[in-house]
Image (cartoon, rainbow, N blue to C red; front, side):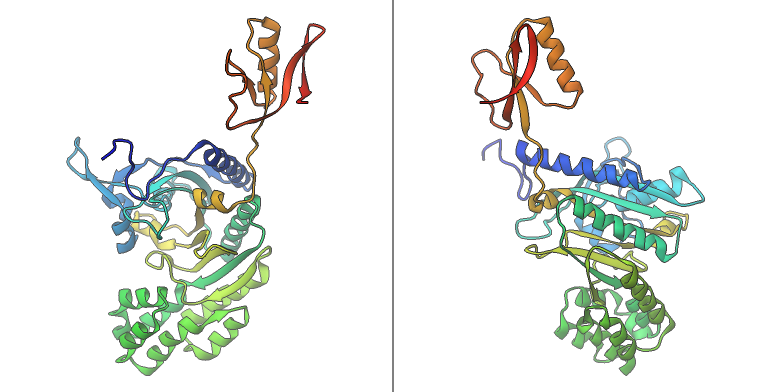
Amino acid sequence: MSTWLLPENIADVLPSEARKIEELRRRLLDRFRAYGYEMVMPPLLEYLESLLVGNGRDLNLRTFKLVDQLSGRTLGLRADMTPQVARIDAHLLNRQGVTRLCYAGNVLHTRPRGLHATREQIQIGAEIYGHAGLEADLEIQQLMLDALRLAGLAKVRLDLSHAGVLAAIIEADPAAAALGDALYEALAGKDVPRLAELTQNLEAVSRDALRALPSLYGDASVIDEARSRLPALPGIARALDDLAFLVREINGAELMIDLADLGGYAYHSGVMFSAYVDGVPNAVARGGRYDKVGEAYGRARAATGFSLDLREVARISPVEARSSAILAPWRHDDALRAAVAALRDAGEVVIQALPGHEHDMDEFACDRVLIERDRVWVVERQA
């Protein structure tokens, strides 16, 4: 086997792609800061139990594990940065009021999400802690839509769901509660035959409600349909009221309701959402409320947030990373050095052509040249 081959679904990021990813990363982090979000940088690996606290079986299966040679304990390479940020809020910052945090970094998955997906994603996202009201859900969703707009993804469909619907049905029927994980998997996969099999021995109210969830998908009218088809449980009523509020308030996206969209249900506790764009089958960004994660870290904190894979967004984004540059000669000349330094300080890309390589410009389009006119170095357009 060639020594330069990489593992399956792991790939290098080459200059043109890396330039676009970095352009988008800077745009998004600058926008997060404009909303008041502070950046944090969690470590790439932690003790496994810390990474998986309150996050269920799915994250465990996606996490690479290794043994720490210093302590003998099992470490995990992070598969999701959200739990790490929740840990930072709960134990390191320990603030009492609202805290807004953002992050960007690599995550690793044991298996790819899809046929051509990478196992090494660049996750970027934002989280808001300390406010249990829908105002925080609305802010985080608008921030996500703003981020996708900055990435050039103007036409976005936002699917809204709510973990409280399934939770209320299960809490009202002990027999359904015993099937919790299996019901979740069937609903998340829209596996109607499997759902029918699982619910055949449940009480009629629970059975009919669970079987109705996959069909409760569509525009805002689905909320009223759900009120008529689902049992009149307080938890369901609250969840549908939450969704109705967000439908009225969210701007900048086509809104859909999908009460069986339960990705991440294992730790979400309220409103959940997924963003889709034309031509891409999977969601480009996901998020939701996860108040229970802070409690698992020993400090209950209301929390909601979103994240996206920057590599995937860069792949579909029409944004062009700037590649224009100024071509300068190589010469032992103090005035030339000063002119080049001044241009770079002003944010220009200046490439000095090494002797014998004046035309080796693979990645940058040198549309201007630095040229000496009457002993003064000036920038001129290429002829």
